[in-house]
Image (cartoon, rainbow over all chains, first blue to last red; front, side):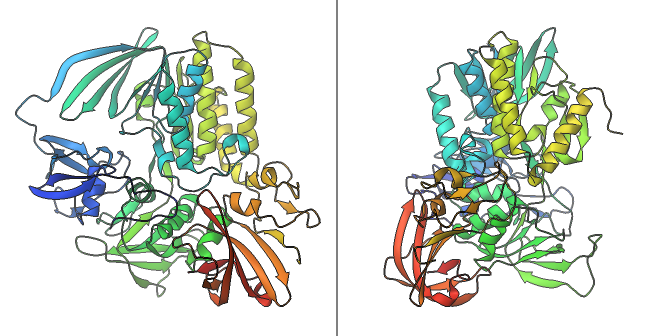
Length: 483
Length: 131
C-alpha cells in the first residue's frame, strides 16, 4: 500500500524505522504519522464503538474528528493522524476512553509567554498572517496542533489557479515549502507545533490563551499573553448519513489526500468519490496519479459543482461522473467492501429500481467543509450561521477584525473558500493586527491592495457564494440580522 | 493548423490567467482574471508554453501535417513514455480511438508536455494517452 513512484511528489528520501502496535512490531518511515503507518501495514480498524462494538477507523486525517485516538507510550486519546511515528514508540488500540498512565506525564509547571501577535493555525492564511505581521515589525507566535506547518497546502500537489500574484501555476506543496522557508528564516516568528490551544480568556485588555505542547511523552502547559490574536483554524470535512457510513474505509477526501500526498500511502485500491465539487474532482485525479482506481464520482446535484476543467481531466481518463446520484449504503463487515449507488430525483430521494451494487474498498466523502470556530466561540465574539460560509462563522469587518478588539480571523474559518483567498485574508489580518499595535507602515495601502485582490478573485460566477457570504458577514457587522 | 496552434478547452469564467502571462507572443487574451481565454491564431506559434503552465491541464497544441495530426497534451502520470513509443490515444471520455507515436517530450517541473503523431481525423478528439 506504499506509493513508491509518484508523478509529482518525491517519496524516495524517507528513512525506515520501527514501532510497536498492540505489541507487534511495525515497519514505518520517518514521513509517517502513526495512522498512516498503521494504514500502510494493513491496519484499518482503529477502535470499536461504545455500545455496538462496530469497527471504526480513520476519517479526517487532520486532527479534527477524533476517530483515530490511540494510546501512545501510555498516554490515552492521542490523535494518531497528527502524531509522527518515532522509533520504538509503543502504540495500543484503546477501547472506549483509554486509561491514564500511573506515572506523571504533564509538566504542570506552567510556562508563560508574552507575544505581540499570536497566529493560531499555520495553513495558508496563518502563514501569510504571521509573515505579514512580522514584516510590519511585530513579534509573532505561530501555533499549530499538527507537527508541521502548512495546513492543507502540504497536500495540494496540483497547480493553483488565480493570477501571478496569487502564485498561479505553482503547486500548493511548493507554495507551502516557500512560505515555510520564509517563516523559518525569520528570527521574530516563533513557531510552536504539536500545540493545542484549549482555552481562550480575556483579562482586561489582554487575552490569555491556555495551550498544551506535546513533547514525546511529556506535555508542557503554556499560558500565552497577547493583545492581538489571529485565528486561522481552517475547517473540517463534512460527513453525511447513510447506513454503514462508520465503516473503516469511509474517509474524508482531505484525509485521503493526506495519506497519499503527505505520507505516500495508498488509501485503498478502488475508490468511489462522493461529491463533484473541486475537492472531490481534484482528489479523484490525485488518486489516479497515486495509482489508485477511481470507479466513479457520485454527485447528488444535477450538475458538477467544481470547475469543468477538473472534471474534464477525470473524464479523459475514463472516470464516470454520475450527477443526480447518491450513495444509498456502504457494504462490508469490518471494512468497506462495496456500496449501493442509486439515482435521485429533484428532492434527492433515491429512485427505486435504479440501485447499482459496486465493489470498492474505499468511499471518499467530499461533501463540503464546516468552518472551525470553537476557540473564537470561547472568546464570545459575535458569530452567525451563514449557509454560504459553510456553517457558523465569526462576524468580521473589512479588515478581518471580529467583534472583539484585537481578535482577527482569516481563511476557511471565516467562510469556506480557496487557498488563494485564504492567503490574502491572512495578509490582510496580519497587516491589521500589526497596525492596531502601532506597526502601521504603509498599512492602509496594503489593506486596500488585499481588498482589491479579494474583490477581483471573487468577481466571476464562481465567486458568487463567497460574495454572498462576505456580504452577509458585512451586514451582520453593521448590526444587521440574519433572521 | 499547419504551424500548430493552441486550443484552450477552458470554457468557464474561473479566476485564472497564467496562460495569458506566460505566452511570449501575447497571443492569449482575457477580459479580466475571470474571462474565457481567447487565442489569436495569427500570433500563436504553437510554442507549448501555455500547455505546460495551465493549472487545469486544459490547453492542447494541434498541428496537421499531410494526413497526420501532431497533438500535444499535458501529462502528469507515470510511466512517462519515451520518444518513439507507440501509445493508445484516448478521447475526452477516455475511450480508445487509435494509436499515437510519441514524437516529442518536453518538461516544465513535473508536467510532461507530450506530442504524439496520430490520424489527422482524430485531431479534435484525442486529448489523452494510455502508456
